[in-house]
Amino acid sequence: MPRTVPPQRADEPEIPLFGARARARELAAEVTLLRAELERVRSEMNRLGVLPAVELEQYKERLTREITEQTATAQAQKADLERQLRDLSQQVVVTEETALLQEAGVYDYRHPLSDAVAYQGALAGLQGQIKSMAKREGGAVLAATGWTVNGSAAEGRVMVRDFSKLLLRAYNAEADNLVRGLKPYKLDSAVERLGKVAATIAKLGKTMHIHISEDYHRLRVRELELTADYQAKVAEEKEREREEKARLREERRVQQEIDRERARLDKERQHYANALAALRAKGDVDGAAQMQERLLQIDTAIEDVDYRAANVRAGYVYVISNWEPSAKRSSRSA
Image (cartoon, rainbow, N blue to C red; front, side, top):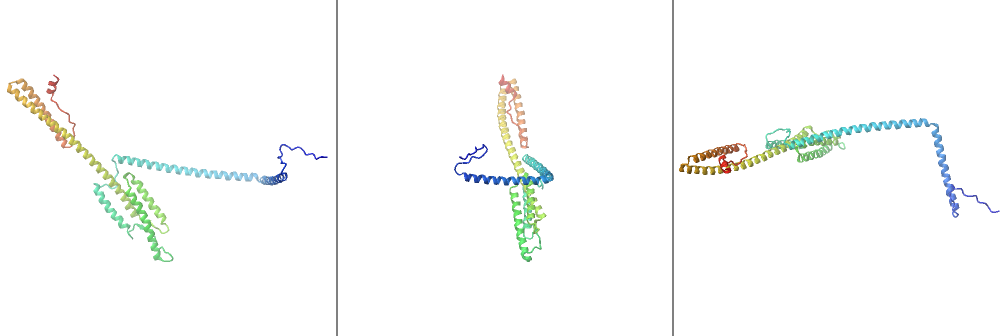
C-alpha cells in the first residue's frame, strides 16, 4: 500500500521539498537551544522561589537608600548652584551699578590724591618697591629651605629657586596683564582674580612650600588700586577740561553777541544824538524832548549790555537779545 502522509498543521513550519534534512537539523538545533533556555528559566524560577521575599525586600531597601542618597545629593547641588547664582547676580548688580556710577562721574577713590600727576608719582614709587621685592631674595616669593635632591642640599636649593622663579614669573605676568587691561569699575574683579592666581601658585608649590608673600601681594593689589584711581582721575580731569573749553567757547560766543549789540547801540545813539542836535537847531522843543527820551532809553540799554559783559567775564553767561527802544517801536507801529 502507498504510505499516507498526514496533513501539515497550520502552526508547523513549512518544510521545503529540497533541503529537508538541512532544515530538520536547523529545527533540531533550535529545539535544543529552547530546551536549554527553558531549563535555565525553570532553575532561576526555582531559585527565586526559595528566598524571593527576602531578596526582593533587600533589593527594595537598596533602591530606596540609593534614591534617598541621590535625592539628597541633588538637593545639595541645587542649593549650592542657587547660592552661586545669587552671589554671581549680586556681583553683576554691583559691577553694573559701579559702571553706571562711573559713567555718571561718581568714583570711590581708594587712595585719594590731588591730581593725576600725584598718582603717577605714587605709582612710580610703588613700582620701585615691587621691582625691589621681585629680585632674588627680595621676599616676593617664599619657599622651603631644607629641600634636597639626590641627597644634595645644594641641588635642592637650586631646584627650589628655579621653581620659585618660574611661579613668581607666572604671578607677575598675570598681575601685569591685569594692570594693563584694568578699568576703574573692574577693580574688584581684578583684585579677586589676582588673589585666585596667588592661591593657585600656592597650590602648585605646596610640596616645596612655595607661595607669594603677603607683603608682595599687597603691593600688587595696591598697584591695581592706584592704577584705577589714576585712570579715574585722568578721566575726571579730562572731563573738567572739556567742560572748561565748552564754557570758554560759550563765553566767547556771548561776548561776541554783546560786542555786536554794543556796536549797534552806539551807532543808534549817535544817530539819535545827531537828530537831537538838528531838532534843537530848528527850535523844535517837543521833537527834541522826544528824542532826548529815546537817547535816555538807549543809554539805559548800553548800561545793561555793559553790565552783562562784565558778568560774562566773571563767569556768568547771559542770553543776548536785540534791544529796541520803545519809542522807536511805537513810531514804527504808527
